[in-house]
Image 1 (cartoon, rainbow, N blue to C red):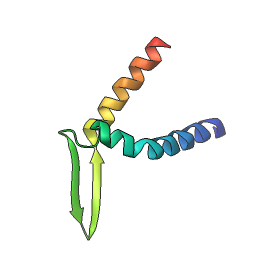
Image 2 (tube, rainbow, N blue to C red):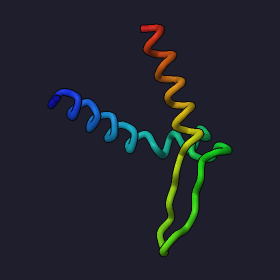
Image 3 (cartoon, rainbow, N blue to C red):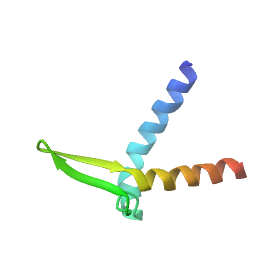
Image 4 (cartoon, rainbow, N blue to C red):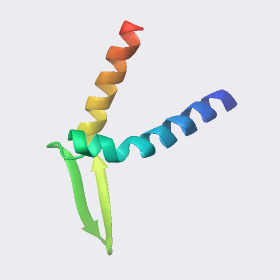
Length: 64
């Protein structure tokens, strides 16, 4: 269980580190990525980007 926690933590750190690069590529601005303001905060729900990243991860796992 602790291994999965470490893997998830490292994946989140890696994702947050790569976020500026992913935005330049176009992820985060796809149709289906929702961005709105509520209670003075900006909320971001990346549904389409999540599907694309999951598809890419699936392809990588099939190849390796």
